[in-house]
Image (tube, rainbow, N blue to C red):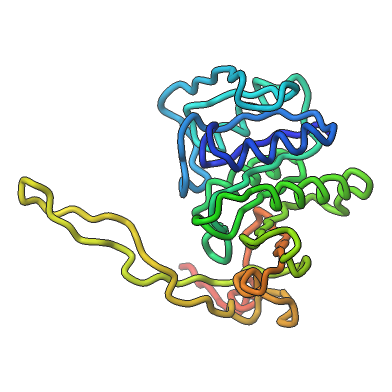
Length: 265
């Protein structure tokens, strides 16, 4: 398959090198376009008020991989690749492997998921891969599963246009319990900002925070409550696959708001 791979951890990250090289060695046609530095938590930001530059990168990847480093956001990278750098569209857009999980409401901020979402917006099925710990540096089990998943999609294409948000537990291959289809959970944080004082006596704030709790999403989102949530299965060493779409319309909200009446003079 012809693959476009991006990320938000940057061109030099071990995650994207492991993913791209594993898929290239499996015989896929791999193109990499990703930020020239870490651009985590940039969401779906695009660069509008300055030029975007991309430079060819050599020696970092498998010899068959074509790679560019871009000074834009993850979404910039995918958009630039699809409209300017690649001669023809890829079969799949992949993003990752992110160093750390992208679970629950974290996906709203994730540059990793946003890069994959840019592919989806352009009509290309996409997958975001994340390793569920920032402490682990073993990306090979995640890349091996990516190879299996891409191979499966090659034989049996996705039935509809969608993004698969895949989180892999940070354990050895033989310790992975299996794969579960999941729904998006909710993550809440505590101590989000650390208040500090600089050497000149001025106050500043550093965005930090720890996960306080993982909670059940609200009922009424048109998703069966019997489907496990992503933030829980990863703790049990299962790979989590959550299908996503970019349309955020709240169906139950439409139903409830349709009861409103607006009167104009």
